[in-house]
Length: 527
Image (cartoon, rainbow, N blue to C red):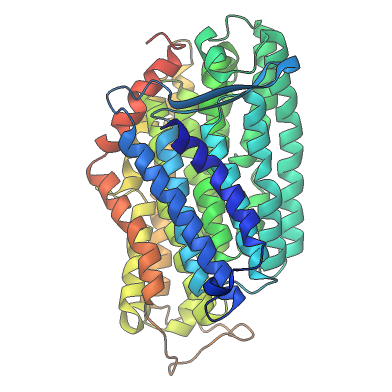
């Protein structure tokens, strides 16, 4: 178990180095490009297998205890240690990350985005995987920061070199926003470590803030929370996200929504809730307010983009939907209750699966039409995904109803539990304020249903009243031959559909892991 976790974190880096080397003669296949893409599928597949083995060996009777731990002294002068471990909170995120990277590598093997060398693409993908997996596995504040930062450069290049229109501007906006947030976060992490005498997250959580003054906790929450809120992204620090998603290649959008956004909310749960509980209690009402506004704002932005004649980009619409969905995650965290935090963790996983699937589907539509403009898609298809590509239409409709929180699918449970957490927040928090936030969240679910059903109607059934001019290079007209789901698309999307249904019908699989760990975390390690 100890070796498996270290392997899962380190193997992608070794795979990235190997991707840059010449392929052995017997493994080149038809071309060196094919060999390096096959290498990416193999490495991510091996990491997924190791993560599954880690989950099978995990002691499910003690999910609150850190398992598969490694604890080695690294920088003695600062008391920084290479400390790895997983519990019921981090294990689901680790598994989802490994799965999404494997599916993206598999998809890219058949549909590589246009750009420079495939070697660089695969190497950057594997470095990105190592950073995200390390974020969910490390138990030292400075290691967490290093892993948190490690993902920025690979994602910047994936957007800037393999993205679409306006990719350079979007990549710069992404890197500047996240780097500035990370600088502020580092100050907060140093403030905690230097004042408490340790950077060990387990020891800090067990101390439960008793070694930190109230002022120190307030400053730490403000600094660390700002950096995490940018990555989440929380309204109004979200403006980098729509541009990044719109410009990113398909797999970049899948990983950005499915994995990178989870790093911010994970930091709130793993660091701020147990280490600075008094500071979090002070800022929780403000965090809840930003979350509630984000839910409604994201939904209204999507509703505007979905309207006929507004030339809304479908990738941009789904990006704004993430602002709303992550608002539910932040609302659950702000409640500081086991119910709310469990809902936040469940919504994290559900959002990764469902929004990852949505970005895969929009990428496929953009490949077929040459555009993701909603007016063009609706006008060009006429009455049609259901008629011309029924399986593609069915997948899109499924992903949409899962995203709007249909009971029986994964999107329902996280949002419901987050609202329940806001209904009865932790002791000391203003209940009237959180009841107001709950009302905003409930209204947001109605708006979410409105814009997603509008998208399904227009794209799958067509928009007879819309007669937009087709985008340059886009296919159009009634004679359009539209390919239905291809074999590699089916292979990449089916696991996400299956897991969305499984989590919706059997939520205890996930909640049984997270709840004991959350109970212990909120009790300061004493439960």
